[in-house]
Image (cartoon, rainbow, N blue to C red; front, side, top):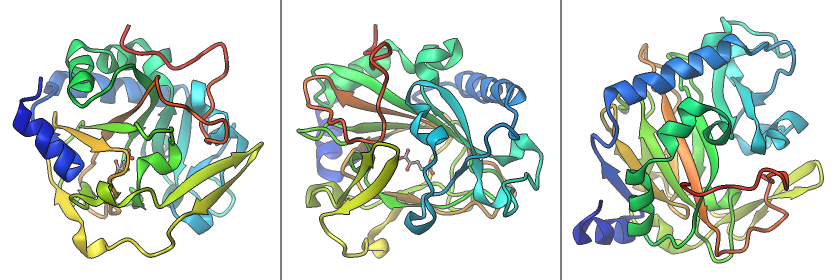
Length: 278
Ligand SMILES: O=C(O)CCC(=O)C(=O)O
């Protein structure tokens, strides 16, 4: 799948951009499926707002129990102070996660392909496990910012093996909140861990210095592009204040040969362990 230059660029930069990795029809099928899933979602049941702002991140039981479910999280600006929707529900969902790749056939087909299995081998996986999936909406005008972070903060393994596959389901530009990343930033180690203590969570900071945001470079990409992200790479996306939607689908993988601690927030139940590509 990858040539030696691409593997070297991934090791050097901490990310790799692969245009036209999936077709427009595949992107459409995932966006249509997300729409159908939202049809079945009753936001009155469990209004769970998602924000990446550390001080406002109230991580409820609905979030903590979403590791092996298909759950819906709402956009902060789509709700009033009581969690009631200010916009129609199809415009209010910030993301769907975190196990649709295992539970839904359309997401399953998109997520388990020979191309992705080959890519995993190329970037050094021995036993790739598809741990987490997210359909991220970034709706026009209200799509929220994703603060700068490293994915290994949330999906830590020893040694660190977390790798993100970020698929542009629509064109992503600076205007509608494309990914931004700090090239080579994965070489500076892990800044913090997000820890779970029963039904409580906290950040454990190794390094409290602010991210050097001036080093972020925009990764503007066309629909169908796959961006591979090292779990240590600092990355960010701005709020979408434009009139154009920016949907993305992410998969986060870990290596089954590494230790997955039980104080990570995301814990699969014993009867639904993460699976590889088979
Ligand atoms: O899609 C985005 O805007 C951010 C996604 C992200 O940071 C992630 O998947 O880790």
